[in-house]
Length: 397
Image (tube, rainbow, N blue to C red; front, side, top):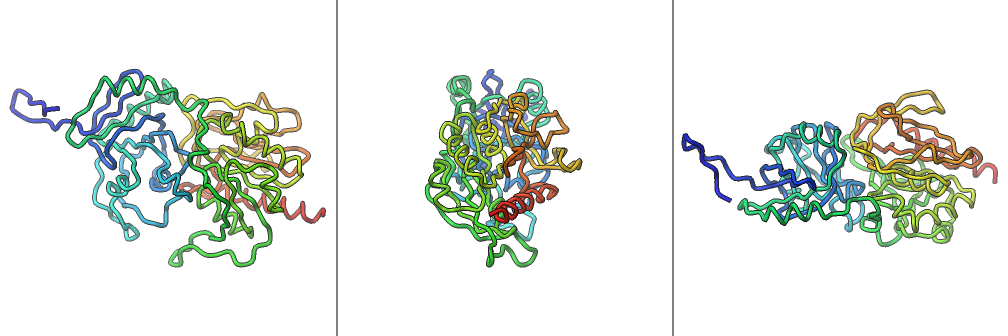
């Protein structure tokens, strides 16, 4: 592609990146990060901080993230704020969309510039986009399928990109947990970050928790360890027999990407087996949705999803409202829940379900991310609630 020249002889640089929506809309910009082409679903995230944690959250597999906050990348990147645990999920996202160009990093913790970090992780980006207009489009029409392409010389096969975007079937029916889960069982003892000290180690655990990895984040594991748990992480495909063989005091069901109904083909029977065993169970995000499926509910695809660090949620069990971090494009349909399942949390944005519990067993889950990272710490109490259930269960013998 050549640079267009106006009547005054001024040359406008040709775009080096394109975002091509499934309806044929073409958005031009400047390429950043990795070069190449990726097809995915486009969502928007309203968080003002924590872009590195967002971009390494395995829950974003299969998605292109549009940041509504205009200045992304300006504090660089570091090795401490990465959320992925497994090499298989090195990049949580397939692409990013930014408003402004990236500036040089300005933060004492930065060890690498954002653009180089994106390239190293294989994340394709486009900057110079009217992200407000794109966000408005998503709010009106829903999350579109799209192709993001970065070519430094500005050469693109536009008809082929449009065809690829239109042909992609989307996230419904996709089991992406298998792409980001770890391939083996391992232990975890790292605790949360402390100023000027870094991360600590769990030295005297009181309980043993098995965490099922559908795309788990490091700070979830750290908070389990921080709350006195020895953690054993098992792959998403672990059966109930595999989980129970570790003789856990409780079972945690992690976050993850993709369609819960698709992952549920193998995960739901395992979850049912654990619930039937009477153990305390705590699920979040994808784990919440699949627990709902295991308890007899159904899940639905959302119009625009929830992605951000400022979502108000009411806890019906306490009457309190917490500001939460969210990242999901599917939701549990409350009308499908059987009588023995109680709704515990609800979104104050749109009224959607954000939490359930079994009335007769120590089993509960929430839709959002109580570990935050990024986001407020209002929901850290849920990890203590889980540990309290384990204490009560062990006291009963």
